[in-house]
Image (tube, rainbow, N blue to C red):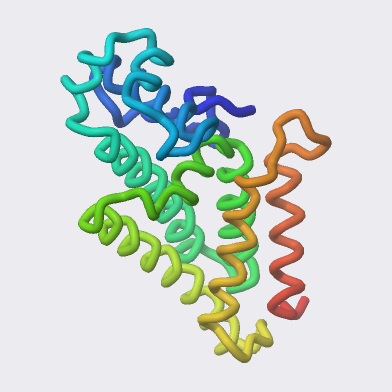
Length: 208
């Protein structure tokens, strides 16, 4: 399924929070160009051309290329945090909540792999103040998964001697899907999500 502006699974419409339409078109063009060339190799002229607009039009909506990246990264990390906190605060046992967190998080990274690659792997290109903003969101995502794991340990459902380390391993496993997922491959985002949920439950030695 992937284009930065393709129809989404789960009812989420990409970049619907970005207005007006010209700003959204530029943002989608930036995602696609950053994913194809990398942030540093992409120029504002490249982005404007992909959006079918003049370079001057870009500066009406975004002061710099870095501001565009921050907007993309902020929206993507907000969505990631929403997915993880919804699962962490949802009903069910720790094992059920962990499975839902991983399944949903992986499904999003697979279905939106172009966007997710930019969101997850261009962090170092952000200005210090913007990077701090995104790092704070990442810490909240980490806390959501850590909370589920800690609940499982307390309930005797998980055998996890190192909760912080296991949290990092779970999130890294999920995020890496954006790097390799191919929409033309044999597995759908739903299938990859289900597979990873099962793998993570085995990782934490979840008891039936």
